[in-house]
Length: 274
Image (tube, rainbow, N blue to C red):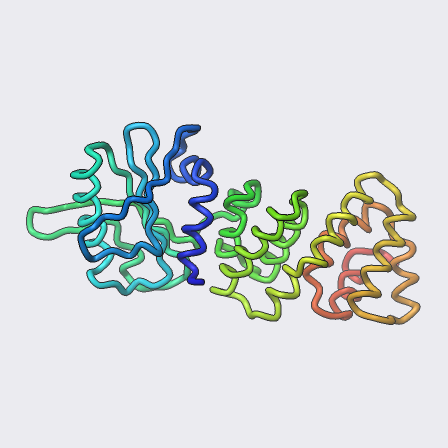
């Protein structure tokens, strides 16, 4: 499944969230248009049309900047066809998924002689991830957002996915995030952080912490450590045993991001006084 097609699937599943994100409108009356524009060229795998009120929201997801015809001309072409077909306002967005310095990703208009057509461009690598963390629909896109630490960003996404109570929604969101994360992360790291059993453990773990049961939280932390790293040095276990509930909570938030025992030891060195 292509990256841009995954985005199309998410947008079709959560149209109100995309309308709210892109044009700042709340609407319960949104129709995802299945009618294809019949004239060529058309890239139905990356294009989605939503009708809300007396306007069409046209979203084009792009992994690559190369296109025939070029993206600016294509946006003009679609605009004219949509205007002719639906006779209403048309708002267009091109959402570039993968970071690039290609100038096409920074162009927001088609210009030739006396013709000028403008459209909106979103470059995901420039977006603040906090906007996407609070919304299940947009959460998979957070993997592509601006960050100084991509690994930490992916870990945060995994933690957010883990808190989704409904199992089917959690599995679907994890799958979408896993596919999109492939644009910037190694497969092993993605599978490590977004593995279903690890996320399920995190849900139970956070529930225990919220109830303030320090001994149960400690027991569960040690269980997670043993399952993840196997038998470890007793001195490390003792350092974990003396952690407060607050420290166990911090450890739980970081645990999904640990790749080996050295990460756990480093965390204990930096976050405890013993």
